[in-house]
Image (tube, rainbow, N blue to C red; front, side, top):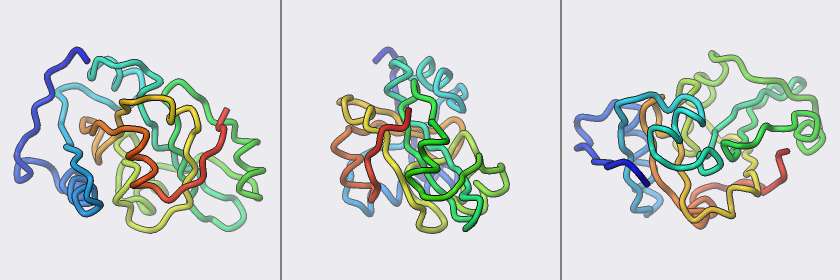
Length: 167
């Protein structure tokens, strides 16, 4: 890792970041949210800001089931593109990319900052099997500039989701 990540005191962090940090702590995970000076909105930007590889970035992608209207969360490796046809088959109904308003309504966070935890409501979640090969991963933490480091073992402890091939 090329960068020096310094955590800031919780009271200096935005409400969204505090929500993520509180959720991680409530799960008994000793994971620390950090804010970066540059954007982590895309996997490429995040990897550059952190000093890791793009596949180590855990993207939180929200889709909308077309028939039921329910949100679907896919936690994908930054290097992978979600095969939406395959995801539709797994979910058993057609899906579409969610709008920014839908993402905010269902998760409580903006696109580019959606964390894998602390959502406004329970969301059906799928985990990209490719994430599980990395000892160190980075996930969004509530804003486009906030991240936290986690391990593949942490994913299984914090996420009640189904592991799938997303490609």
